[in-house]
Length: 402
Ligand SMILES: [Zn+2]
Image (tube, rainbow, N blue to C red; front, side, top):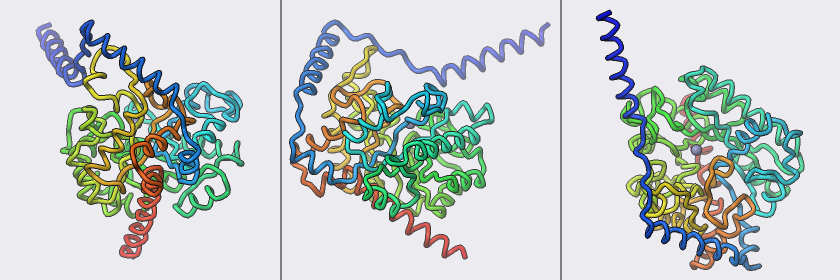
């Protein structure tokens, strides 16, 4: 009996500790004055977005460029809302998602990293790797179902060739190192099945890497984590450090021989959430030659002064260009890109409702004085440079290992 009591006390203490670690403080309610100010700003954003026009000049620049988005969660939406069947949801017709073929065409998308995300909870269920393979199959199936629209791309040359035929170059990105279940053999298998980036973590820590939304455990990246990065360099798989802790970002940047990507992250100086990239890391990314692809979610882009309250704040799409400009200011014009996170996020800025709205970004960049080559770098040329460099590094490392 006494023992039982001690066990109960210990368990309740441990669960309290765990709860404290996981629980986030509740968002405050705005004062009536703050609520009114936010609502006025939201209405102004809505009005602005409704009358915003894309000029023929902007559209020509946009369509001549290589719009390459770093992150779209359509495969997970298809799995959970269409039972992984393009018969259940035919994306050649209008869908309820952010993404379908007509709107992709309207948005001028040329290349896409389709995310083969699986939740971090699969880590404890023991089915992270197999579920990721199923999601990879789903991207292959999408390319087979709509062969005139999508083609799988495995190299930078593939992307150029596919885009020249008028199709959307479709690349695969793994979102979270839990998908390799602590095995380099599984990492290599994902690469062999077509994956060309892996985000080191998702929302939870791994045995070898810390997430930005969990309590740090291994000081960023441990020895095995470094081995994963080196293996990715050797394979020619892009190392994605969205979702990881700032320490993990820095350690990865110190280890990698190839440029990194942030497939869907924005600037922390403008929106202070841990999912975003701090200025010191932006500077290190510039030295590394990597690219930060701006996430569109309102929660990651609208300044905290507005979004920290317990009400849904959208902001307007110009906030995305604020993030792009900040990254340019701190890192450089060669280190920024687009990583929408469409179909993986809920609240979007007004005027950026779905994949048909990308040209708004080009127009706003033009309005702010950016020229054609600069806009093309942002839309996708930077991403192309990073993939080409990653392929060169991989070849060198493979030669050295012989
Ligand atoms: Zn994500």
